[in-house]
Image (cartoon, rainbow, N blue to C red):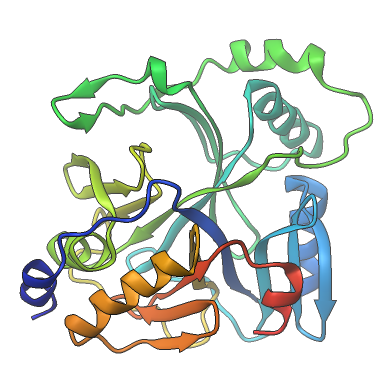
Length: 303
């Protein structure tokens, strides 16, 4: 039903300046998670109250943690978070992260060259997947027809570490300019995911791979990855599990937010409108927060 409605009502796409804003995670032990996200990843604590903390870089909120002492890791085949991706500005910053992981002896889950980017993979103490990556310039990207050519090859670790000579000895955490570059979700059905995220909301297809779809705004390689590698036909994790609570998509202004609201109304979609945001659930009850402009720490703390 969603696919038919979206396809018949929406021919619009997201504004090219659309990007991922912040995400919210449930964790089992806030102190443990704060130690990890500060000392290993390099976030700063921007605000904290009771069982919630807002983290970011340069006073820009990027990650919100909620504690649930009973939270268990999400089953590997449940829909929800596959990983969230921290985009650093350049290869030096990626080397910075690699050196820090080595010195803290925190286990690295993988390291890949995707042609459009170079990436490191790991998991937080609750099993939430994390990618830390740097983009190659768009002038170096390749295309297969209209799709962006992405691969998974071995990362040139030595080449990245060769940039380490430019790293200050006094580690200050994630560098200015760091953002959440993309989200990657496990979903139960790619056709349904495309109907919601592309035909309804307005992302465009950047690439298709077996069992996966990559979508974006403004020609980016992907703001959102969607896969069914382990989760085809899957269900949500049990209530209260560790994992994704929500993520935000930042639009340039209220005009764009209002345009999307009109599409949602025309499609008969259920959503909640607030002053500068729209909250809507995808087919697997992942909450998507569409915001007009970047939310401040105060905005997020007030949610």
